[in-house]
Length: 130
Ligand SMILES: [Zn+2]
Image 1 (tube, helix red, strand yellow):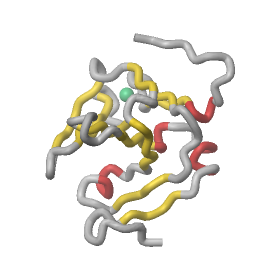
Image 2 (spheres, helix red, strand yellow):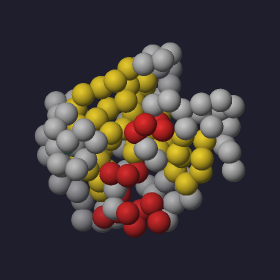
Image 3 (cartoon, helix red, strand yellow):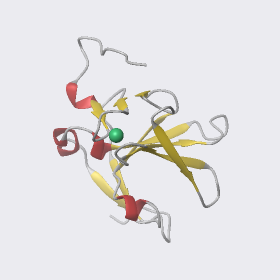
Image 4 (cartoon, protein in one colour):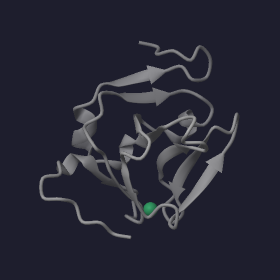
């Protein structure tokens, strides 16, 4: 399904995986980005922004995506099945955890320039490092 953006959408809020099979549109410039050092995030190199579940428009999912579920099985990490870029994560039970994360590295670099990226110690203390 392809949805055309309304005329007034900030182009920085339009992102996609490398091949374009998965397209994302953020509802707003994120307040911050989070770079987490947990066992999966450090491997992916993702910079996460968090939004209320359902507020991010995601085209090409799930038909063009694969998922990975691990650990305490609260969320699925989603990647494009063609180019492999990690696009977002979403809760397995949105009623319990109505939030999802979007990987800001799929957006124009000028968006990240506007966002303060904080380091999160997801590997150990579960707190921001600075
Ligand atoms: Zn792709």
